[in-house]
Length: 412
Ligand SMILES: Cc1ncc(COP(=O)(O)O)c(C=O)c1O
Image (cartoon, rainbow, N blue to C red; front, side, top):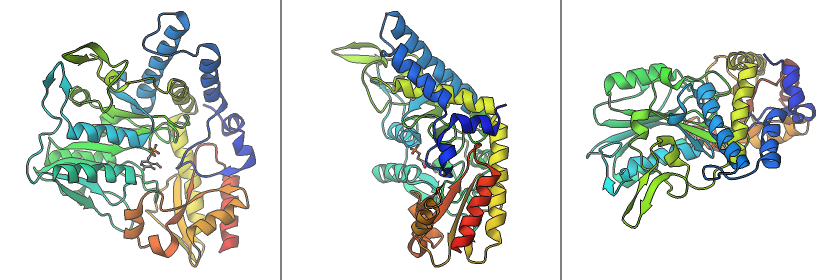
């Protein structure tokens, strides 16, 4: 296990600021930067095609990264992990495959979902725009119904909120809310959805999940799980991943065609690579980034994913309890222990609070957090311009939380 002090030493930024904007992206620890430096300085070359030694090393390290990321962060096999730029791209890849049947070897295959009249897609009001607009567009393109689940005031998604019938073929919802911090019981929700309609496919937006906590996609029972490499896992920006169940990835049409994803091409057609996850690697990938994310997966594993989850919850609890004492502070989401806490101060615009905290070197984020439907639902879009978010990671300290509480107290 790595101590908090060791991790803080690996992230020099933590010495200058109280970095509490981990929900947006995280600083990258030195060993992860070192892994990327090593690639750039010692064996920089393209992957998949080279025969010379450093090109082979680059290919090997890049593939090793897929193994580490899938096994540590998601507990799936490397063949089920598609490399992406971010969580958003994972949703885009799935949405493309929902609108286009696989075309391979000159033949059109069975679609992932055989859409029929009056079929529906279900999403929730809690979603980040990337996990909302993406499915709204599919519904509008294909003339499907689009139902939006609305939680109670605690902003917790629970199984009974999801109305599923035989016409509900696709459901998408988040693991953790970036805008109010609630952590949903994904496993229980998926179990209930599948009990009501076994063939309904479920996409989970895990942008705020892996790296902050242990995640086992098989145990959750989802069909798709997309995540950001540059948040919980402490990987570099421009990285992420998409888990797709094996029997579905086989059926998916890649969104982009090009170099490195085929086994043969002729004037009359092409045959895609036999390894399914490789069908989504067209073009020169973010080699250094993925090698960095592989190292980052090892790094959070060295800290211990349970330790990260426990510590973030503890810090969040202290902040929640501190804020609850303040008369003019509104807190959003449930009262459960969690690493992300959002609030407003009556009479203040959320951005002004964040700017005032910045003057004390406390880095938070304010606004709608790309969740305008949720902000409107909570009645805080116009009133406060969203809310203020404090989002922790393992390297934040109790001392920092006390300073945050003090600073908010002074503003109040
Ligand atoms: C819940 C949630 N979903 C999706 C996204 C989009 O993630 P990315 O920026 O990695 O595409 C975010 C980013 O903040 C998020 O918090």
